[in-house]
Length: 229
Image (cartoon, rainbow, N blue to C red; front, side, top):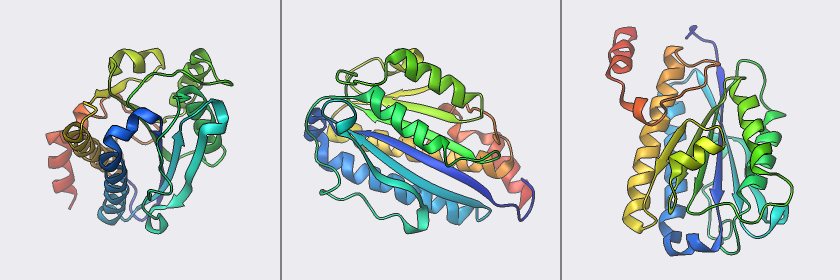
């Protein structure tokens, strides 16, 4: 990447807050805060990157249950999610959450900015009112053409198949247990670090990353980075 040139990177996390998340509540809450901390570490490691964090949760019926908890906040200023912020209950308006969150972020992003959108859920869509699966799929396709990267992390489903139906290439299954959430959080943080490293090396600027999870430990990237030091 060009020396001294700052690159803005928007990290959007769309997090399930439906009732079924109650069984892994503590782990989900600590996991999202560990994710925020990982983004802070990425910015510290790559000072030419300026990271912003948005967190949108979803539960209940339609748009009424879609809540923006953090809205494009510089990562250095982001406060951890609290138990007041995150209170699982209700159904799963996944499509409405994705439609609203992606559309709102699109108004902030400018040409040349990096974007990573991650969806974390333990269940299937069952209560959206405004967005259909087709509408979300088309929206994802539109943003991917702009270079946005999408990742889908799901439990109690075939995450790869569900992601494919939403036009998302990167998918990971996890077990909806305390241990499963811990493993998922570690894998996600590792993948995020790999994404930031790719941006640092100039390999993914305005390019839709299609191996977000499997490419996070790319040895070639590590060697290249060491040679740049």
